[in-house]
Image (cartoon, rainbow, N blue to C red):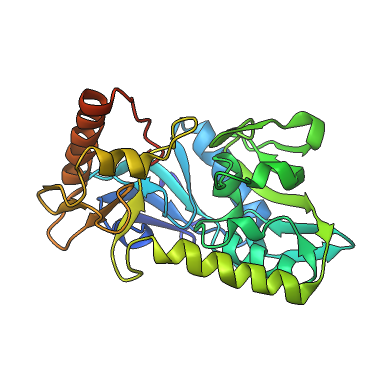
Length: 292
């Protein structure tokens, strides 16, 4: 019997994952699904649990490196419009877990709601951003989060209020399989002023990152009181190459994947950078990238 009998229109075999990540690297997923609605999502998760099949959630793939051999189990993408809805009620904005973070930021600004504009130019989805508490040195998504609805690996749904959640630097207590939706309690402000701040921060952030056409990813967490990119630059590692993987000349905490690059090249370069920064500067860098 087919493991996903009844889901033939939703589940695909051997889906290439490179096309779903910013690095554009890695092998296929054994199974890949894009459910149309919540009921279908829960049914897929429960079917997988019943058959002891591992499940992974894929957002926009901006913080992900997939192994060259690919991954076993089921990979789920919340790409359907059902998971990308945004509603605003007073100063509270609610967004589906599959919504692009950038769309949430611009929507809040246009509606005169301040708080999330510091997250402009951070890629990914709401679900991924909450799992890793995405942010900058001055703000993060967790500090504005008031509610979340999650689905566990067994397919059970739970609601998390603010008191049920905790957020730290690049991590959160929202470690369930799926963040279905989340609400953010924001502050009223002038939409024109918010838009100006948004544009300014967008320009500043983009100016120091790799070019938009390059296949690249941000790799390391910032150690307390320091910036990983500056440490890598101080260690003289800008432009360092292994195979098709190169430390960016524009921002040393980004690795660029050139056309001939493999995931193994990126992993080897990550190891080299960690060793060299530790040896030359005495700082142990922690990988921020999610590696499958």
